[in-house]
Length: 634
Image 1 (spheres, rainbow, N blue to C red):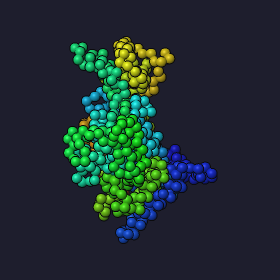
Image 2: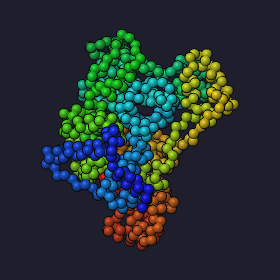
Image 3: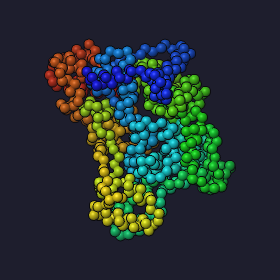
């Protein structure tokens, strides 16, 4: 048994007592979390009574173990972790396991995948050499630091400034959609408030209540997005584009400044007014007429149509997070419920339904209120859900008895996401994947595809210097100096000292690391793409639909190469010290399916080993990994 894991589990059992416990915030108080879990179970029990439903049985330890790992950290447990949990005798070990998982690096990795999909976060940008590297790093850091959802949202919506500055890198939320502010606004409303406004960009929504005029009044809050100081470089950039020098070093250095410094900055705080489009077709206003910002629901927030202002995005962020009544907390609470329980309290999760119009108004109200009480701490909220008896109910193979929602009668069976499958395979191949260094911020200066001035200057410093320039003359002088430095390979930061460069951890598509560390979106020839990973063009575009290519990949690809036929694969290390065929088979089952085999299964596998010898163990691994039990979350 892995004693370190066992001690970690036991340490979580120590109660918080004394005056310190009384000063804890709700999200940090174990007693509060347990009481909240009980309240949720009471609401579910009331639903059972109202519907005359039999209370489901709690699932066994092995199923709970695998479910908790996949939901919390996005991978199956290692053989060592599985044995530590299954062999420990303690009535509170499920609570201890949840605590262990939510404090692990795996939790933030799994949350990063969720956030990347929700925000459509890709590494590069179409039609530009600009990238989303600092924005990606900001989001990943926010997930690792468990930034409250309300604070996270405010940073994104109200962001402004230098895209490479860690304090303002959230501007990537807007610059990722540069040139498409209306689409960005539609996604903002869908992601954070569960309101679908795509149709209202062009006409009154025939399926909802949003009018085109409403949409443009809302768009006025973010209208007027610019770059910071890019006008200083417009003449130089145009000259280089019109010249006959081709795309040599001078052109590439200029393109780097244009795209990766100016193009990744965000100026203009939101003017609060916007002209209606020339094809505006309704009688309440004329095409081209300027309208002021105004919110369509919740507490009314408005801005003048008579003067240009500069704080529209801040006003929009404040309205979304604090002035939409229960809509903002309820939407994220329902997203987290689906993430943990497998299905939203109501579906779809990106369309807000007032609590009094749902099948379970009391539960929906409680979940929204709990999110507020926990100060929008997503980890604490999920902790509560993972502590519920509802989460522990056995698998229900039947569809929900409630249309458009969940009947809470046991977890529905679903195929793991592509990221969960990949991360689980990596666990079998290489052991705990969270021991691998996380992908770091690559802030090297690239001219073309080649890093330059490494160890002498980076993008964070360069961007700060360039955006501080006040005129075209200053820019031209700076550009000439920078060009010489790049050509000679020298640079002298302020103070004359060499910059300390931290180790750069980056991974190509072939790396055996977690999905959150790999290039985004996954290349079309990668396992992740084949199994339905999102292309991150639209919100939550992942798929769990099967296809023939997935079967062929399991039979002939990564599984066979890195697991079945790889003697050094981590799962085979679990056989060390085993002296009988029975024990070896038991350990393989625990490593792959996280449970011991049944008597019947043991008999089959013993026959296979007897016939095939050592090759029989490889055949067992192949069969288990390609089984539905491995690929599906119960």
